[in-house]
Image 1 (cartoon, one colour):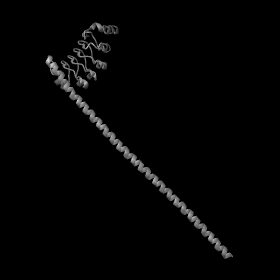
Image 2 (cartoon, rainbow, N blue to C red; image 1 turned 60 degrees about the vertical axis):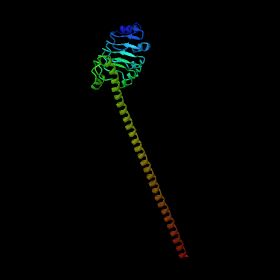
Image 3 (cartoon, rainbow, N blue to C red; image 1 turned 90 degrees about the horizontal axis):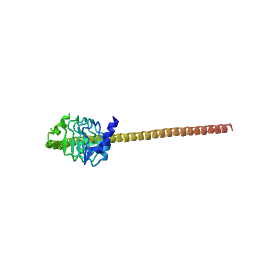
Length: 233
């Protein structure tokens, strides 16, 4: 089936009309990102009604995209850097298998329209998304979900900030301990040297005392000899 897949890809030109690429109902299991990247004038992409289970990370480099329809696919998650799609205004994710959105979703600053209907969303996100039953509700969904995701982004940032502060504090404590240890070692070395010197001084004094005692002894015996000699004379 690689053959049919390739022919599909090569036919991308046939699928483009003006600024729109229509890849709906093509039995796609993945998005032809490399090909889409070549047609930056095609800002509107319809990928609805396929069997796409995930988007590759490179999808997030298609920063020219303004409107993307991924409705009626099998998406279980979206790539982490989705927030890079700065031009994206309209995103249709109706009828997929999404439970959460990537944190970077909060950075889709152009997003005005979002449909998350018929996804098994986690409770907080579902509440923010609302019903998405008409144009007005889809616009509301975009602004509320962005707000919801910004709050999550803030939490993530705060947690990271806290972790960094904790790491810094631990690092500081480690440095203090290290300095204390070095000071203790220095003190111990100083003490050792002093004790060594004291030992050497005692040995030296003992040697001097022994030498003096020998000298004394010598003198005494010499004097004794003299006396004996005088007595004999």
